[in-house]
Image (cartoon, rainbow, N blue to C red):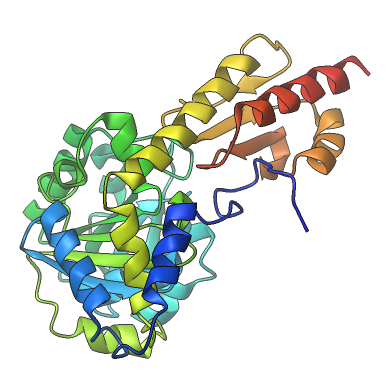
Length: 343
């Protein structure tokens, strides 16, 4: 059974062949469970190579689990987390961060998915007042849910502000590889060196079958293993998660995958520029293209190349590109758009 490659989500793509090979290689004999295996230790060492020796690594099943573990580990239930209103933790995690951490999420309206100090200041009050949840964490997404990317200076400014107010900076890095390629920087420059305290490092959207990692930088992580267990994120056969990260962090596979998906997004955006009925709404910094399109073409277009609506009130759609998106997919997609617009 085969499926047409669409533009709905980079979660819809398959697994990169090199990652599948890594899983197969790990699938030999027995290995100690729950992270006591050699693959997990090697993967932890690889992360420390990339991010620095001060990094503590905890593998989890999925992105929501990574965010929950990250937030819960550095907060108490009377704290609050400031984030963009479009943040995955606010919109697409069914209240999991609030349920598990007890924290209140304080969303901030943004134009491009990027949080600014001026915008978040409205939530910076009530410190020491027992009737008010205490702001303790700023959470940003890199690349953002709107496909935009924070500059390193923007991240540093948010980190400095957080630390000056006795707060933490959390980064949801579900598409961190795409952001690093966009900025032309290393993972470390964009996170540790910029002042990020805890990172949800994504792999699934960049060629993995499953698995994410929570990375803590210079933090007390004594309680994290218990939090991970309580949130049902401890994988018994962890070697298969670790083997995938070893594959993607070796020989820059992460960069090859992200570079390709970013390139495909740029190609799609370039092709769309000549169509006056299509209005691209966000800067195409990573692997997503957001656009307002005529309502009449949405349903027939989705039947051929499935994708999601982003904002139905203004016919805004989201078109995501993956490591396996092909130029011919984009050419066929744009040809169909032009055909439908003429009907």
